[in-house]
Length: 122
Image (tube, rainbow, N blue to C red; front, side):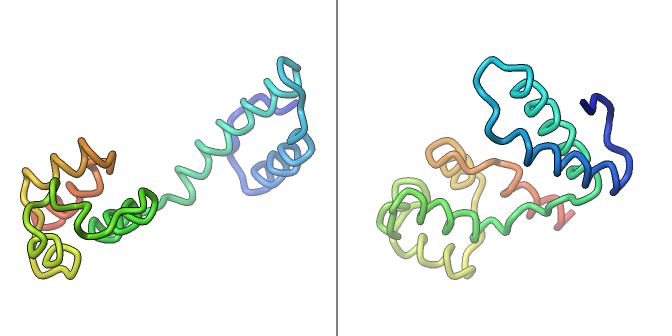
């Protein structure tokens, strides 16, 4: 059983192999506990060695729209008029703080996605 932080690519590969062996672990078994621990260790290693950039805010909105089966009209309550929605989705209008708050609150899009735009501009 692996019970320490993953520090090398070799250890990472070994843990991935072990995870594959444990994928059919039964509920409330030691194997399932081991699987859960290994998943956390892999996540920590991947966060450090394979960081992922946040998606573009407009791409995130479009993705969420697809997930929820929304069309442009479905965004009107969160962005404003249909023309504003179109302008935002076509990158002709920047999101306002009130739009960002509404999209975050009502569609569950993480605020960090929108904030990266402001941080990059600073």
